[in-house]
Amino acid sequence: MKHWFLILIASLLTACDNSDTSTALGTLERDRMTLTSPANEVIDSILVQEGDRVEKGQLLLTFDDTTAKAHVTSALAQLEQTKAKLSELKTGVRSETIFQVEAQVRGAKSAWAEADQQFNRTKSLLKQNLTGEAEMDGAKARRDTAKAHYQQLLEQLNELKNGTRPEQIEQAVQAVTMAKANVTIAEKNLENLSLRAPQSALIDALPWHVGDRVAAGITTITLLATNQPYARVYLPANKLKSIATGDTLEVNIDGLQTPVLGNLAHVRAQPSFTPYFSLSEQDRDALMYLSEIHFEGKYANMIVNVPSGRALEVVLP
Image (tube, one colour):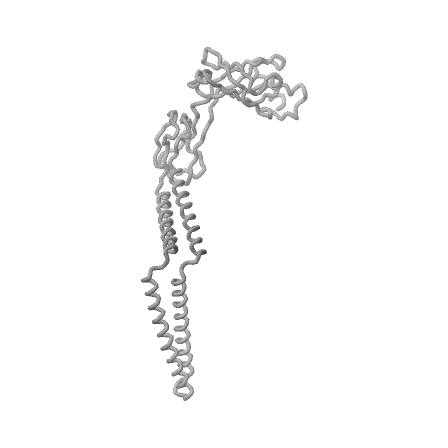
């Protein structure tokens, strides 16, 4: 039953029997574009209405950008911080810093010497049974701590005097590069919150309102391109042998008194109604193939204002 129903549809679309198909039916179409929500944000403003004609680059809708602006500010601050660190590594440490660390080293050395003397005195007293093991352990711990602190400051001083290693500078350079990339990403995310027309178009659908929160990736605006309309036509299989891509065909569009000429631009490889392999050889002539006919020059100008969806008829050879 389904098989014969599909064959009936094909027959109706061609408006004649398979052996004498002289026309094909279709509609005038334009490219449909959809703009989606770039983030899970609230709509801040809508600057157009359904049916409006807009130009390429025109601002259509904006989302709340509070969070996006904060991300840009944070990324810029991180970039300045990494730049400052790189500059510090390249220019080296100031002499005042070295003098300060040298003073700390001298103080730590004196503290270590004093703790060592105290340890030796406690050790002598322990031999004379004038103090206990606990005092001895405490003196030893203080000496070892003072020595470790002195060695730590000494290593820090040597590192400052020897300068920055090439590996450290390279790491800082990479950190700056990463920070710049983060700024670019943050600024692009902010820019994406303002939806603009990708080309001259007609606002076809605008289902949302100011204050609505739209999830990321959800269609927010649908547009129809106002330039380059084309014919979407169903061609019968028995005519494909006499028609080739690039051929010029006569098209009669409802509402136009004069036929226009268009070039067959594309024929789909697969039939539109039912799988090719399920039909007999005789039935395969009833298959319909979705095709596109493009218009150029004066013919394109003749139909530039014809609305999308208008019915048309193509004269077949």
